[in-house]
Length: 523
Image 1 (cartoon, rainbow, N blue to C red):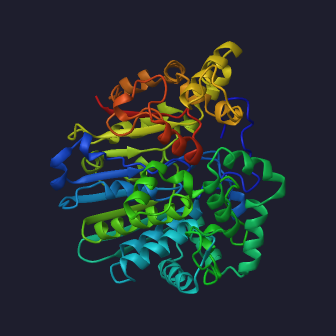
Image 2 (image 1 turned 135 degrees about the vertical axis):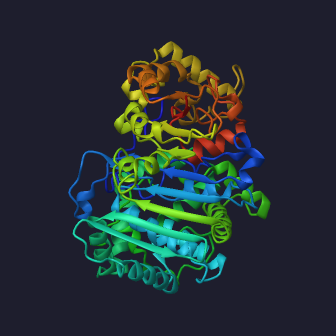
Image 3 (image 1 turned 90 degrees about the vertical axis):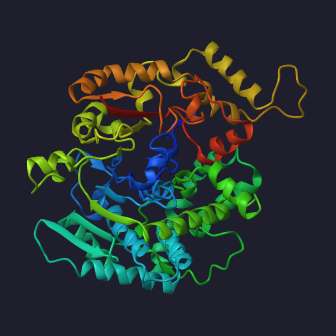
């Protein structure tokens, strides 16, 4: 991830490209308040979480790599979207979730089985098991046993088909989960199930990545602009590998979480991976305030925020009319697979109210996504839309990144950052502002609109929109166009958040400030 001001991008020491966690905050892709409104209570919804572009080294899992990889990273967007529906929602909810990475695909089916099953432990206990399976390197023996039970149960449904691994679970009269995975996913599941490495071997691998002495400088760069109390919690999490409040007993977490390791016991995540990047720190802080928790332990507060989200999700999915379909394939292939074995008329009716494609446009470009998914929007719902975002577009067009500016213009932006942070010209200071606070946040005050418009033009977006009967929304209704602005400030050339919000966003979430979000609707 590159940030303005000349800092080198943090090249990960760990396994390249295994994004088992998302690195953008969870998003509600419905945003009912700004779209369907009160009518949503009785409306049926079909939502597709189609995937995220990434470059997994699947050879680390014993799988032949391919050029295009599609993965959503984790279930956070699903969780937040379902939690955004009305409490008394009465409609039928259909979720299609795709992830090419076989390890993530396995995690998704195991986690969803635990979340949907009403016969399991209490909502609170289930939430904690899922939370630690998502984000902790070790589990308690009882948690690990529960996860293993589901792994065994899912594996037992494998009929040995040479090409596919499919199955279905029924959780009561109105909830079903089905999956259609390639054979390689079933093969990996068996390797994970039968893995023989020890917890101590796994811990050695994790610590070798997350606390590598060769990477100390990169870790320090991430935390040095944080408040000291937040540095402590982040460092504690990296050392322990457990997403828990500081002070909680750790001894019982004595069993490796095999869903975060390869079949050989190798830690799969990059060394800059952090659950703090997957959840909006402003919302985490609101949860902290509501529970009257101390501000000092951010990772502990994140634990309670995610747990709250999971409990709410469990309550909803166990009473909603819900059908979930899991896939593990290229994003551009999925629309055709959805139509296999159905009539032309039925295929034309397989449309979605929202299609979320994360940042796959960084790999494929926006136009192929419009070609594959533009025709899949539900044209009977005026609020249906296709969502994309890009992190890497500034590297693909001249003038797209703040670093492309001349020194004079960069110095002017640096003065804006300094003023925003409360440092005024002529002010007497005991010490100057940390240069890192200025240089790493230049992008927050850089106008990304002209460069991004040029990027879309060069990638043929207007032509693709005409060809596939969609149009770009000029006024977003799901997410703001960039990080650091409210949705009503979508056309602002720079951030509009308060100084306190800037701290949480800039130094905890740690964006590049160049990310751009897009929405396309049926034309």
